[in-house]
Image 1 (cartoon, rainbow, N blue to C red):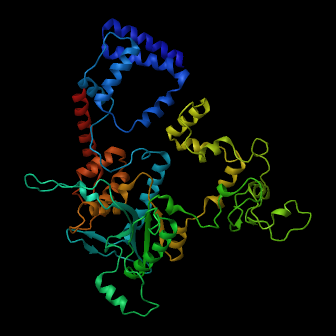
Image 2: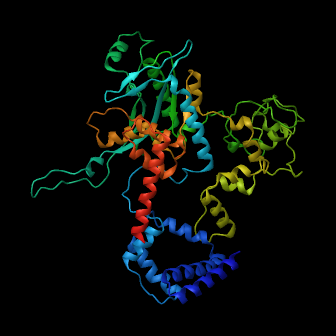
Length: 530
């Protein structure tokens, strides 16, 4: 395929030179150079190098690169381009000048697995909407749901963490007299980390003043020790300071938050929503984990895992049987693993007990294949990359979840055990705690912080930390959900939310209007850059 493409590019270069079409001449000459260079170096090496130079492109840098490297390399008649020409090229390539701002993450926004989870998440929230109170108007007037006999009201409580620095205020502007100057500190100051919960009726998850007074009069057993679920720490590596946020601190905060929430919302079902922070997905210390198992039995400093039940879909008729993860403390003298008494069995023994001796090709299973090793390894070095590493980087950059789903389940012992239903269905510590009190735990979509109302609240606290708020942070999140439900994705959804931010709800015709305006805007920008 490459020689054919190179031949076509040479033919196009010849025709463009005859027509004196400079733009096409440069394009085809670049393609020829690319096809020559690709088999020797690999086009991924260039992609990796460009990614290391930073995010964003400046016309001046593009002009410098084209004039000093590209044009000389291609041996064209034209030797230089102007900054304005580089600016137009950037526009034609889809680049737009933007100010830095936090917003929607596009890198994995439209991945197949993310889109699938988005449909599920919207269905989860839509299913409980009729059981929730509605808050509307400038005063956030509450309208209770109409519930049938035996049904309970449902309440959503969202969680997230944020970080401040003591000297963040230094970025603001000042009103000064002539000759006055503000002396700012050079460092950003002490790190301040806050973990909090937000609900629509009360805002910050905390008891109001009247309930705080009533709580103080209660008995020792009934009285709540904490009346505000928010936790603020100043993490530092210095001795005597707070440690950085870990799962132990999160679990302690969660226990307090559950007590406060059920004090505020009696006889309700609370839906706790968390983001995909790695801390939130932490498993219990005795949870099943294929990643922590050795191929053989035993090992140093190995965790103790709870017993499990072999899944019912076991093809060897062993489904429903109890399987111990550790050998018994007492083993007969002729037992092949007597020296490992009381220790973990390992992947090989577990697979054999489940009947998996050979893979679907009739071959013995290896401990861990090359693909599985690469999945858990760090990013490879960038110098002197081998062809195999280049191939793997390409696969990672494509970010295609379909290939992961198509991989064989029995490629090795590690993946075989990892994909077993009992290992896959392990619940995080947060999910276990929430389920124990009869509530429901949800995890937000990856790359979708715009669906978490508390993100808007944190933004407000950082900018207007001394001014009162209407508390209507769930409105923007609701508009995003409606846009995704109508089928809008990516930049179109963000554009439509900004356009209809004053609307209570949006319909399909509103989305069509927004799409037409967005396409017209893009067309104007393209014509400007041409």
